[in-house]
Amino acid sequence: MTTTHAHHHAPADLAPEEPQRISVSQLLPDVYKAMVRLDIAARQGLDPVLVELVKIRASQLNQCAFCLDMHSKDALAAGESTERIVQLSAWRESRHFYTEKELAALALTEAVTVLTDGFVPDEVYAEASEHFEETELAQLIAAITVINAWNRFGVTGRLAPGHYTPGDFKS
Image 1 (cartoon, helix red, strand yellow):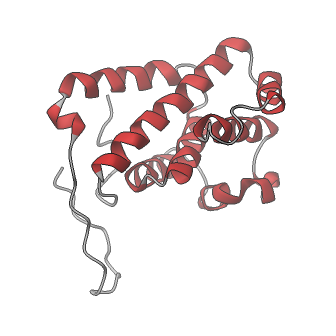
Image 2 (tube, rainbow, N blue to C red):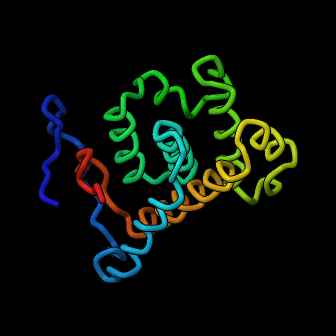
Image 3 (cartoon, helix red, strand yellow):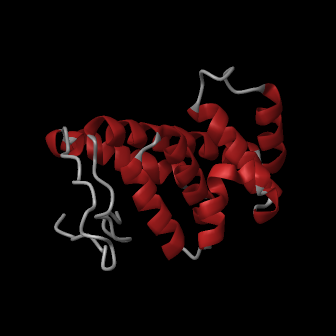
């Protein structure tokens, strides 16, 4: 990708960009293609805006800068509001910005992403299953699982944020 930074009014004394460690997608194109297919299959039938919220929230928890850059931009391009994206990291204090269904999805996203915090609590799962019919719930679980896998590639490979333009990776 040859996109340049869009820091038109940024100060000149920004910290240098961290060098990438490894590009699993370039070294293992079959794994990358399989991940893309998995991603497409996982989000089939889910509301695209909901999927972006889930991807942003998981990426915040995993501190995946590359995925945060991509999915914030994709969410904005899909018509999501800046306000709802900004409030995502504090969604429990900003419940009134989201639907009950979105809130249930965000709670499930956190539980599945941070499995070391007592696994996926019954009440979180029960709440999600009230808002999503069974197949849709399976899709949501798959979508959460896929973004967590992408995050692990991004964080470990130290993929640099700031170069993504919505539409770059449309498959």
